[in-house]
Image 1 (spheres, each protein chain N blue to C red):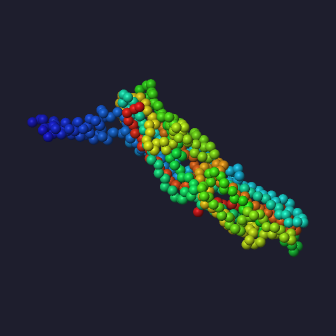
Image 2 (cartoon, rainbow over the protein chains, first blue to last red):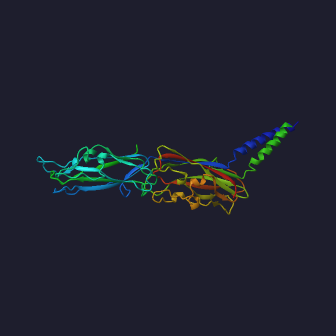
Image 3 (tube, chains in turn purple, blue):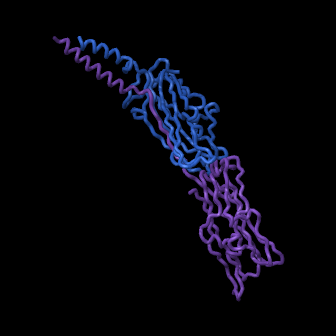
Length: 219
Length: 205
């Protein structure tokens, strides 16, 4: 009479043991590793530091001939996506201007600004990369010739800083960088920006300046 | 008679998977099931040569006379949210993986003879990027990556850890394993990536 009860107890004990030990069979585990490689763009100087440089055009003394006084700035552009580069110039700040006396003072329209070279030949530049310079800002063939000693930049044809009073796109392109970071020496577009003006009998001053802000984006 | 036979069958089935038969155990550091998630975060490229790293720790117990081995197998998936456009997307070979420590609890059997497999015995977070590029050359070169684990691979083995594999508070019969993962942020294709690493312990070596 006792045997069925005993067997039932053993049976239940066996079930408990089975379930418990099955649950403890921990011979595997999982580790999930996640990350994000975000949209990224950068513009730096030619040393991969922040781009903050001064182009000094010097003392602009008028002379015979047609030589522009020019300067240039180089910038490295990187992106992992199609990009646009825009620029904006602040108002021209003129120090200690003399009386105009019916003459002309230098203005943003007298200072040519544009892209003179785009180099995208690095080994870690994305395959098939292309760049498109907005035609107005394309000075790859150089600045226009001076005629009659006057500013050679024609509005609507030859860009000047006056075309940058609002943030304006000057360049665009496909993905630049295949990989690498800002320290990589071959995954960027090397951009050369040219700035030029012709010394003329503008109203005297002790200096003028403006700040051009470059912005790269990956819309 | 039914009960008697059922019990015999049940016990027969139970024995192979009972605590008396099981020789290894792998858990998280709270002795629970190892299901960990570690994030490398948003990897914005900068100028630094130092990889971004994360780590996971887990416990290994083994009472197998012949020792234990730990194998890992890793999947790797990416979800791009921009065109590749002639560039490179982060891959398993860009994520370094290494065992940075095997720490015995106070009660384990000594001396220890734990062996980290070739290529996994390094700290990927200390490898500096050269020219801003991935510094991990693969297990064969001493710097394992998740790509080395695609088909599954032994990463660690050793002698018997203790005479039991009990878990819970107060137990000192385990090894704590630390694995680090690292990646150098770069101008990879915009994407999310996920790797699921399955860790398995079995009879060694």
